[in-house]
Length: 211
Image (cartoon, rainbow, N blue to C red; front, side, top):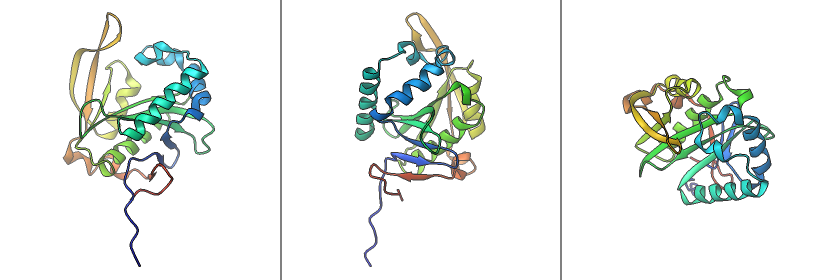
């Protein structure tokens, strides 16, 4: 019997015990917009991209088309965080490549009605496992503002180390610079991290299980 070929990443779809984390598609434009607009007051103080909202349905379609294209090109991996039925968007999370080859930054936001349920931590642990065991990157980071207590709690729960706080690093809007905390797991900590224990199933672009 000829052994089956190994299925490589990237992971277009990740299933955890409570969530479906998958590549956002243009078909998600409506549900994505609803989740953001319902959470806009919560997102505006901490997410610079929220300033451009609300977007029209066509603008949302074009945005998600761009992200899907980037996903296929390996530029960035923008995912929606869905309930198991995929009828409700609980938030979004990305594995971002802007820090160079072999590095991923995990970014996330959660719908205002679903914070404190552990969804950001569950998602980040799954993405960390994908980055480490499927994408085989050498470094993963989480960046967040010191004042965002919900965001800073995620890397703490995951066992990340606070490496530095960069002063006036991110421009929220013209003339408004904010500090940025950098968190990363060190190699010796990964074996005991939440990511190693994360129960995930990962699938490629056509639904094959990734080895």
